[in-house]
Length: 88
Image (cartoon, rainbow, N blue to C red; front, side, top):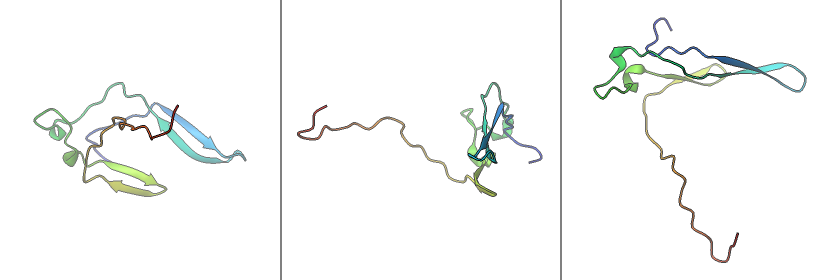
C-alpha cells in the first residue's frame, strides 16, 4: 500500500509456537495512542467514510477481502426469560 488513508503502527508482536516448538503464527496486538486520517475520507459529520477508506481484511492464509457493506449489530445482552420450573 503506497499511500494509506488510515496508517497504523502495531505495538506488540507475539509469536505462536506449537507443542513441538515450531512457529505456527504471529498475533499482533496494539494499543492505539494516536492516529491520523486523511481529510478526504472524513464525512460531513466528522466520521470516517468507509466507502472512501476502502478497508481490507485478512481472512486467513493468503486470502484477503475488501469490505464493501457495513451494518451495525446491537451489543446489548438479550433479555432472558426464566423457564418454568427452573430455579437458580
